[in-house]
Length: 344
Ligand code: GLA
Image (cartoon, rainbow, N blue to C red):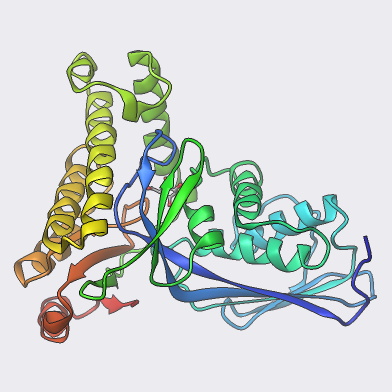
């Protein structure tokens, strides 16, 4: 292995993602449907031959010495640190790196800014040294998120940002990580809107919901909660019965949505998004009133469908809109919710 010499910069840019449907099922054996978006994270790594590591980001307003070997500090730079520790463990980098991190991805929005930063760091650090394909980068990034950051997330986000290109939908079977890339039909506009309510996965609510899903699967004697039969889940008590109802129904919706995408059936896809939102609100219990209202208004003003996206508890909604209606629809929604921002 020939290590790049000092002052040569290795750089990688990785997009964020929105999940169109298939929420909270990527660790329950479901198929998910994320799409990469244009906002991205760029990481540059330059060996500086000083033995000291520095991290700089105008986006995060930081420029300081950086101890790569320190434990996670509950700070965004943990994503970079975890990836750099991984890289150092594989001798892709030595001590003495200038690391620059720039991002146009809103943080706490449910658009996988953390997965994008981890994957971009791994990709930059491994350039020319290890031929990691998208899936290998994604598995490494998930491992870092699970063990170093301590968030027990599934594989969807990392696969979506490592493999996706903006405008292409990834139909990902999360059991074996087999996938198909599908084009979004020309007559579909996907709009992603930040509600203004921020949240963090590390705040513990993600782990609680995930543990409830695993507990429900164990109680029903299935490997994956998505495999539970509808009849069997009624034997569970609340809240496990609700989580099981969400996982099984969302898995079915996701399968239907892939068929609707393939046939270009926008209104059917939209209906499935609406049902997904209801299930996330009532059974998974990961929505918040501000977002319920935003989703309700998005649909009543003419979207084919809308739903909270990502882990929830705040962040973005995703809506499907007929392109010709788009501008009027957006103006009317913005009038009702002046603080919302359109991401794409
Ligand atoms: C977060 C996690 C994903 C997935 C979603 C919910 O984005 O990182 O693995 O579980 O929440 O669908």
